[in-house]
Amino acid sequence: MPVTTDGLSRIFAALADPTRRDILSRLETGPLSVTELAAPYSMSRPAVSQHVTVLEEAGLITRSAAAQYRPCHLRPEGMDEASAWIAQHSAAWERRFEKLDQHLRRTAPDEERNA
Amino acid sequence: MPVTTDGLSRIFAALADPTRRDILSRLETGPLSVTELAAPYSMSRPAVSQHVTVLEEAGLITRSAAAQYRPCHLRPEGMDEASAWIAQHSAAWERRFEKLDQHLRRTAPDEERNA
DNA sequence: CTCTTACGTAAGATCTTGCTTACCTAGGAG
DNA sequence: CTCCTAGGTAAGCAAGATCTTACGTAAGAG
Image 1: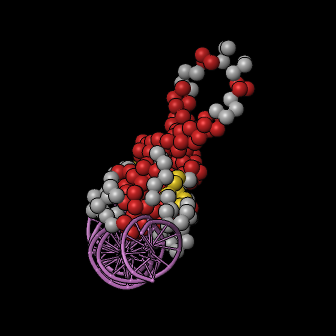
Image 2 (image 1 turned 180 degrees about the horizontal axis):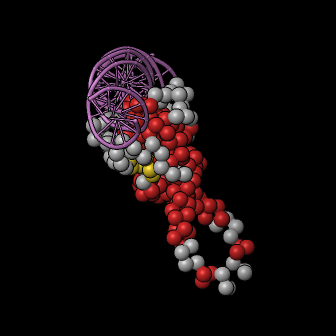
Image 3 (image 1 turned 135 degrees about the vertical axis):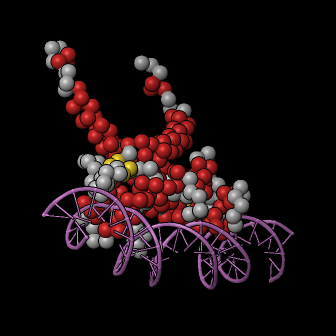
């Protein structure tokens, strides 16, 4: 990854780690502190802190600056860009096969006309 | 990334590169050879070949083994897993805000009971 | 004040990624 | 056969990712 990475690349890169995806899943039920997030994993707390930073820089979560307790919570609009990219390209995928489909149906399309 | 990476991580990692996303976009209009894919980029053809290998190992494209011409084409079901993950978690995101929504609505929910 | 808790960050080891150039194979034209 | 085209692969390097341990800081308890 180059020095300056675009937002979409950052989001997909953030999602390309099982630990980070698990963190996102666990935040869906409510905010958690870094210490709480780190508990189930076998890695050190600073490692989890770095994962959280990656998620934050990708715009997928935010951290409150509340004293020494800094709960992490989801940023709902964070995944919109990735979601939109996938949706758009899935649509293109499907259009390609719809065209094939239509082509195949032109061989015997008679059943739908007499309704 | 560890020695063995799960499929979802491989897919997201493959999507986390602008060149590879661009390759996928260009394949939506039909299959292209590695040489054709490499033409617009300023990097070497082997570099593009390696990007194509990454996409292939993620299950996003396939290569025909036709003689020395090996056109790359999309594998439509390749993005399903990523799409499903995003959809599922976007849904969880939304449910979280629906619950908030419902909670707010419980302050004045009387209109729906007398149908 | 000191001590604890929660957390970030710096330094460093190690692995992976993304590129390069150089080289190799396979098929077709002559 | 030789030559060209298409493309995969190896070696090597710079940069980044992921972890570790060690340390620093800020807020509250006593």
